[in-house]
Length: 162
Length: 45
Image (cartoon, rainbow over the protein chains, first blue to last red):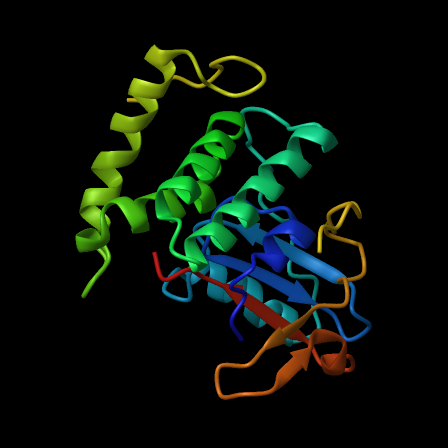
């Protein structure tokens, strides 16, 4: 399935991918790992296997977010992300980037927004192949610059990068 | 359309989500009730 409008990120409130969410037969969410879930990781595979065997998948990873957005800020971030996608879809790329950048200022740990910006600003890093090494170098560089520029999220700069 | 409902957490019921399938058509996740489901979400970036 394709979630081009970010519906699942709004309904499940995640800021990074890849994610693994386990849903029981009655529709109850039993486990969620947002960011870093991989079928190549034995610990993630073990969680899925326990769940499929009818066992408790175990505790979900803790939310280690450095800050929590309030409902108004969260709605604003989400609106700007979606509005930016709409602008981009009609060729208004500069305006789209402006919306996304504002959203990122409000929610700097949101990798969904950051990678949306990257994919437009640095298309050569995403096609024909994703340059993961570049992303690992780019993220701390950007965060250092952002912290120096004074935007670190609603609670200041609680997590040093480097 | 914007949604203001609280995000679903572990222990909550998965919200009704309908998304287009890559091969055409749509899938509502509630159609999967009765099965144990792994939702794997990733991005092309």
